[in-house]
Amino acid sequence: MMIKVPRGTEDILPEQAKKWQYVEAKLQELANVYNYQEIRTPVFESTELFQRGVGDTTDIVQKEMYTFTDRGGRSLTLRPEGTASVVRSYVQHKMFGLPQQPTKLCYFGPMFRYERPQKGRTRQFVQFGIEALGSADPAIDAEVMAFALDCYKTLGLKSLRLVLNSLGDMESRTNHRNALIDHFSPHKDELCSDCQNRLEKNPLRVLDCKKDKDHPAMESAPSILDYLNDYSRQYFEQVKAYLDKMGIDYEVDANLVRGLDYYNHTAFEIMSDAEGFGAITTLSGGGRYNGLVEELGGPETPGIGFALSIERLLLALEAENLTLPIEESLDCYLVALGDEPKQEAVRLLYDLRNAGIQVDMDYMDKKMKAQFKAADRLKSRFVIVIGEDELNAGKVTVKHMETGEQSDQPIDEIVPYLQKMTREGE
Image (tube, rainbow, N blue to C red):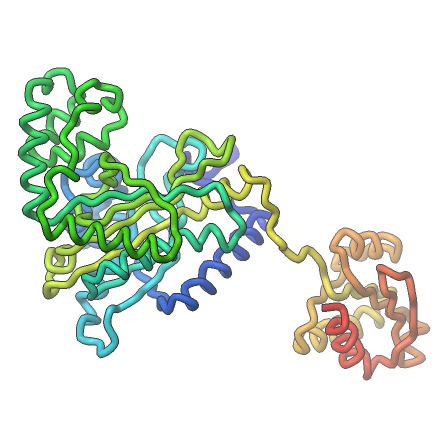
């Protein structure tokens, strides 16, 4: 029986992988522009990290985590998101003591959630994310949202929409929580079992329910914006003022709550309005999480960040019919005719590669015509032919595939010759 990839996962084949490499390189360039440094954390962590960091009442912790017990009896979990791991590392390595603050970090990596697979949602997915730890300035909230938008704009996407909300500070959230309980309690028996549990533990999660989203009580639910205290309201106004200054369009959605418990104050999502993108329109999301560092054993430290799915980014590019400028060609292909010429070709292949020239050759003992066809398929700019006659004369034949021009070049001068020719074509 053929063994296939597990449900909800996929192979990234070479042609597609080139798109991933291009996108990841662009995101890394952007991180450098914004001065965010890369951090790499383990793929699995202590289960407690996500129970405390993400929240016991979230669907992620209750239903979606890949959790296992190792041989030492420890409960470990494949990371379902990146922020908790980055904050754990921030606390463990005492980055709060670094002289330059805030600490600005970025990461790439696979995440794992046991969800029902569908377009744009898989059980293993790759995220790019950033975290800014140490500043409670509303200006950095605006910076993070600008960064998130630029991740898409730098790749040419246009059908974008920034949606934001304020979840307020602890006082505002407590007042809103009580109002939500009072509002939904008369309808408790009409809600799904998950929401019945959430109503007492974390009623904000009720607003994020997919099953009950069309219940009439959702439409009339109390808005967090009506329960913001003066500090939270002023903070949110400052965030919006900075976005206005940057000329960034946005819309406020009082029902935007995000799916993680650690968010407070600013919460946001970036949507794709591209036709045909699919039912899941959210490209990325993030927000402020003051209090998470303390929850994980560190000092009082504000923080904000966002994460995007590389898979959904690629789907958005496809929906907008954008083609990435990926170079699909080879500098040079070696055609060897005979055993001794092949030995010389192997040496020359090594020398050319050491000189930074992208080059390949035949390893299937094909005839010369078939080797030229292989060079065509690889879109090789030049072909070098080495036969017995060329070898005896101490030279090779170089063919420029675009023009058809051929010339004989000394073997001991072919490396600098091709370096010059490939540079001229750049």
